[in-house]
Length: 165
Image (cartoon, rainbow, N blue to C red; front, top):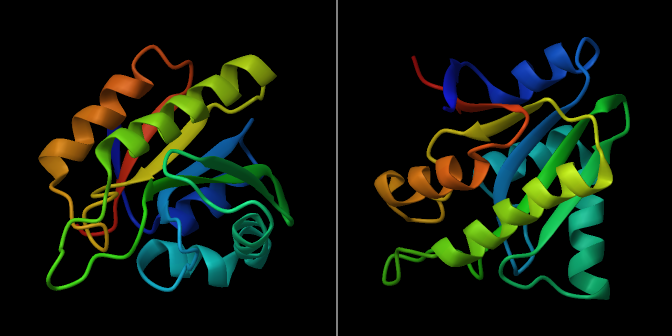
């Protein structure tokens, strides 16, 4: 079962990074690549190393739907950001849904495999409540079960972080 926390996901992660065995902020990115809006933009501004790694992957090998990139945050050795390539492009007014549910599932499965195969000491994963729904345009009733199903049996505490009270 994934529990819900309330507050700013970045603030929660940073405040707990020094006292934790490992935290991952998992969020959806597009394959363009640009971190120009929403949580991705906040992550890019707060952790420039995450944006640099994201852009470098886009330039060097390109982003494909279902890709996963884990980036360590420079000043917080116990904090990582998981870039989940769940949308090819940015939603537009004429084509509102950009989130690809199967690609998101693949990225999440990659995260679970990364944790178990590499033996990483990640014990908390934070997902923004509504991931893939804002700028991705998908319905939370479609996204939430994919996250819950993929993380079921995952040996970490998983949380949806609601930035509204």
